[in-house]
Image (cartoon, rainbow, N blue to C red):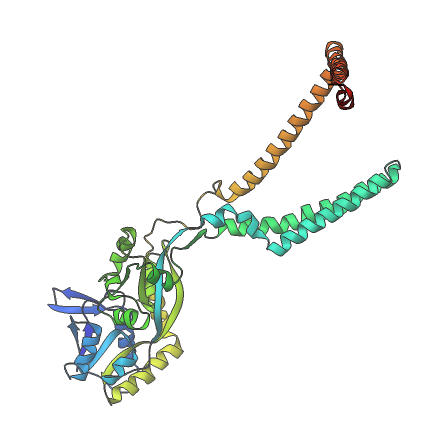
Length: 405
């Protein structure tokens, strides 16, 4: 039985080919091959087979099964509706979908106003109202009973018990806990959040050109064909992101998980997961092997063997990104707005104090100092005398009218 496997898949973690010089033959491995071999052990009969690497696309490999070039095809083959016209598929051994992956970038807005994010807007307004209300009540009590030490002490007691204990202890503790959590988690966000942004800006996106994803992006998601870049290896995606060649990458969900497990600190999933059929094995139309493999795969899934194989695949991946999320020292950015507010208020207070002091000094010099007081009174008197003589020197309009001509 000739079984085709992809020879040039972008993700070698699913189907991996190597050449054994001692045995002079190709050796295959990977998650999909491991699932296939585990499935064979649960079949009620023995199956003789040979794995044949195929250098074409996945669609072409599926068509080879239809054209009887292969008796079956295995690997990370997506169960896709258009492919059912050529082959029958087994039960998917892994769920799948189309997932967008983008690079992360620092959330500067979140960092600048992070202390405001600790509480909601309603909470901040309620705190402001309660603070003003309590301060007003205490001020009224102390003002009305200012001569009574006991009642004045009662106002101080209210201030301490309500304001200090409530605000400083309870609210401050909650604020500190919330802000601490925000400072210790990731302060990064996706560089792109939706495909509409990519389409509007004509941004380049990357995907495996040998898979059906190119057609899905163009026909279903309405991307322009010239904006879709073929990237043949999983290790080429970080370079393409770094060089600005692509703004987003599209994978099937299992491939996206592998990519993020390998480059776990520089990229993130964004946008919705467009559901698909899953990964399965392809057989000729009407072949009883499709049913037998489906039953065996379900047994593997229910026993947890598929999950164990999947965990084993992820354990072999090492995160190679140098980007650390949430572990960097805290800089001034999260508190810059707080410093700005405090600085502006302090500057206004200093300005008011300075102006008030200058006005008092001028008043004191003009009224208390003998020389300045004498000069001040002299100017006033001189001004009055000038006004009097000036008013007397001007002829009355009635008198002017009575002068005979």
